[in-house]
View (cartoon, rainbow, N blue to C red):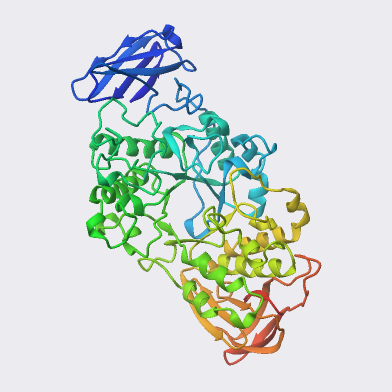
Length: 582
């Protein structure tokens, strides 16, 4: 499908089942119509000798007396959203790239928006080349997976990426397909995998889409062959839900999945708003509005993606408490590896935003520590900030903690408590762009990250580096943090102190204890239970002055545990991580 390049020209093929005739025009033939052959099954095709990559083209579709000039739905490059399709070859030089992601239990995701992550000029979108310039920074931070918000061709000059018009074309303002592949190759060379956010729950929503009434046919003023033409078309973003039950539309989406995974070598897919793929109203346990063909599509996405790349991480954004999202397809599940956990950031925000420790709901936080889907500990992608939670009427966590003073002492203390919980709780942890250097305000698509803050808050970045290294067990000191097990060993509602035990197999260099003091009081000789007797060493202390000069800097080397209990000093507003050498 699309424009397929060979040594002597280009084959063009397009689906337009209600067309009377179809032609291709382009810069290769002075925009004169070259008629395509009717294959009698809704497809039209033809070969134009001498056409080459880089030339522009469009399809001309006739339906009765109506004439439509359309871009290629499968074009790999669009000059602009309102421009032309471009013939694009598929011969990118991957060099010696044979990248395999690190095991999932050691993966640390960093979510970013291409347009704002490294925007060098406030008036110009950031690009894939700008991302490449920051790969060393992310690698030094300890990141091994980057999740980028959608990069398919968008309907606007700036946006989050969820208003997509051509799912196969990479956004030109970001640098287009070639530079996207360059970015992936460069990330792989740094040991970093790439997860791509994809949008199949709706297209558009602008009804000026070329896909809208693509070949002239439609019913009830709806979208035509690519869309439902009845009540099932309705989404919160317009009546542009693809017709998941139409085989050609299913194939359109599945071929797109295959392109990202095979041709572009992405290492993961985050499928946006899956609940609106499987249900018209975006509701759980709502058979009246369910879309069985949408559920089947989700299964097919996972099946084909991992058939191409067995190690591929597939993530659902489903916003519902549904085990079947991460159940295997053979058990009737959708087959995702993991799903975004929305409760986790909500509970942390609610707990940490208050200056009154007595108001902190530590029970709510404790409930989130052991939460999992289908009894799989990596079934959740957990985070304190994301593009959704840091926008949509809210703001970044540190801004919620301390509005208008989002980098003050209190905000920094609470942010490190949140980061410690994030990076020591079972699940796949995700960091949102800039949180490691206290970026303030809300997330939007026009304000680039302030990289001067990375210098100002280098100590907070160091804290993240240390936490990430412990989470990955980089120093072979905390294997428990890459294990499935957690036991909440201590809940002190009165003093607002909790402790939990993480382990893989158990024993020295494995058993890991995490202690959180949410209060603003210091506790001397505080007694806690530990899983093993002997010497325990502090591996992380959030109050170290190396993280910030105005931190308490209460030095705690460790403690001796006898008869299953030990006493230690717990600083105010602190997080401690301990393990044993032997």
